Length: 98
Image (cartoon, rainbow, N blue to C red; front, side, top):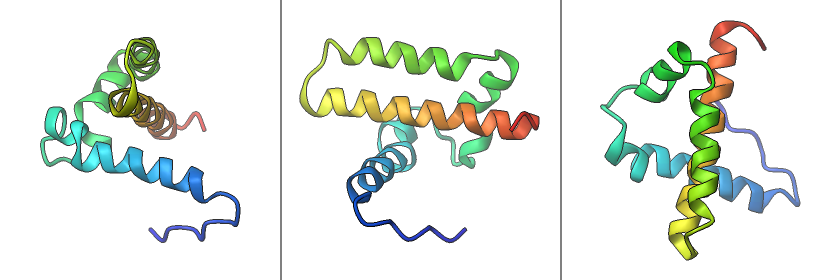
């Protein structure tokens, strides 16, 4: 997959999205959830397919938890929200609903 060119004025958005990817692949996500499987084969996606709404519920939980945090800890929770939202989109694609 070729990454798109980042349009002028969208560099900060791109950085946040890359930070979310980095967290999932190398940070807390890998440390707690990954088992060297591709992202779309990991537990969060499997659970979202058997328990529809799991990813969005987890994103909501992280949003609530982030309100009690500050600094980098809060940033990590919010990046997790982005990752769970991506999990929902992947599930929708796999189901053929988008």
